[in-house]
Length: 573
Image (cartoon, rainbow, N blue to C red):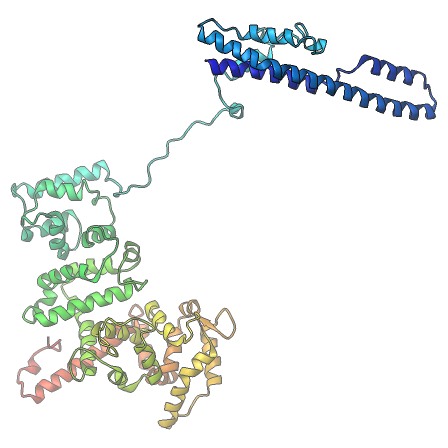
C-alpha cells in the first residue's frame, strides 16, 4: 500500500512536468506583444516583412530560452521537495493514519505554485464529462470495454467451430456398430469354450472374426497370450482386438502390428519366420515337404529374401509400415490362404520359383559349402556376364554381402543377384545395376562409364567371330531408347521412366541377352504378348523350372528308376 501511494504521488508530479513542458503556448506576454506590434508597423512593405520575420525569430528564441529556465526552476523545486512528501507518506502509514493522495498532491502543488504558470493552478484544467452522459467519451469507453481487454479486440470474434479428432496415437477406435457386431461374433465363438480356446482351436477366430490369413493364427495367439498359458479367453481377445483398436485398422496395419516385436517400428526377417513355419505346416500345397525339414527351411528363407527384395525399398533390412502398404505382400498372403496350389501364387510364395533359385545356386556352388566366389559366379548363365561386372558385384557396391567370409557370396546374396539379373525391368533391379555402372557414384551414368563396361563385350564378340558393334553406334542406340532429360548422361529416374531400360544393362555386360535382343526372338515376343501380366522373372522361372525338372527326370532314368515315367513332372523335393 505504501509503495503504491508513493509511486502514485511521484507519477502525478511527473505528469505535471510533462504537460508543462509540452505546452508551448505559454510564452512571455511581452515578447508576443512586441512581436505583433512590429508586424502592425510593417504594413505592405516587403523590406519590413523581412525585418519583421527576423525580429519574430529572435523573439521566439528568447521566449524559448526563458521558458526553459522556468522549467528548470520548477523541476529543481519538485525534486527537492519530493523526499519530504514521500517521508510524510511513510510516517502516516506507520502511524496508521488515513492517507489522502489528493491532499498530498494538492499541498505539493501549493508549494510549487509560485513557480508554475497560472494555467496549471487549481482551476486551470477543464472538468471531465459526467460518467452518466450518453455522449461522453468516458461513457462510451466504459460501455464498449468494461473490463481490461485489448482495444484490438473491438471486432467480434467468430464463433468457434469444433474440429473432430483426426489423430489417435493408438489407432482410431472402432465405430459403435462395428464394435457391437464383433463382440457378438466373439460371444458366439466362445459360447462353447467358456474356459478359452487353445491354439489349434483359434484358427477359426483368426479367419472368421479377424478376417486374416489362417497361417497368422499362431502368431496372433501368442500375441494375445503374453503369459504363455496356452489359452486365450474371451476377455483377453476383446481386450487386444477390440479395446486395443485393432478392429478399426486396415489389414496391412493389423498384420504389421501382429508381426512386429514390442517397441519396434519395423519388421525384421526373423519376424516372418513363425508365419512361414505355420504355412509349411498347414498349407496343402507344401505337404510334400514335411519329410524334408532342410528344404522347408530353405523354402522359408527364400520367401523371406524375396519379400525383402521387393518390399524393403530402402535396403535397410527393416520393413516399415509405409513400405508394407505400398507393396503387394498383403494381397499375396490372402491369395495363399485361398489357393491350394502354392505354385499359382507367383508372388513370393511359389515353390517352383524357390526351386529355380536354389538349384541355380547349387549348380554354381561346386564344393557345396553354401558359399560362391567370383570364379563360381562367372559361370552363371553359361558365362554370360563379364569379369568387370562380376568384380563390381563382389566389391559390394550394389549391396553389402551378408556372408561373413571375405570374397564369398552367401545364398541370400545370390538370391538378390538372380532376382536382379533375370528381371531388369523392376525398380529394385534398376537400382542394383545402376550402382554397378556408376563407377564414381555421382548419381549419373556417363558415356565413359558405359564404354568401360562395353569394351569387354566388344572383345568377347570378336573372340566368337561375331560382327562387332562399335561403341559410337551403341551409344546412339542407348540414348534413343532412354531419351534422358540431360544430354550425355543418364540418371536413375531416366531409367525408371523407360520400358527398355533393362536392355541397356544387357548391352553393357550380358552377352547372351544382348545377342538375343539384337536377333529379336519371335517366340519370346509372342510369349510376352500372350501373358502381359507376367514379369521377366516369371517367364524365366517357368522356362528354368521345366529345364531343371527334365534334367532331374533324365538323371533318375539313368539311375534305373522304373517309376519315373508314371509320376508327373514336379520338384524332387
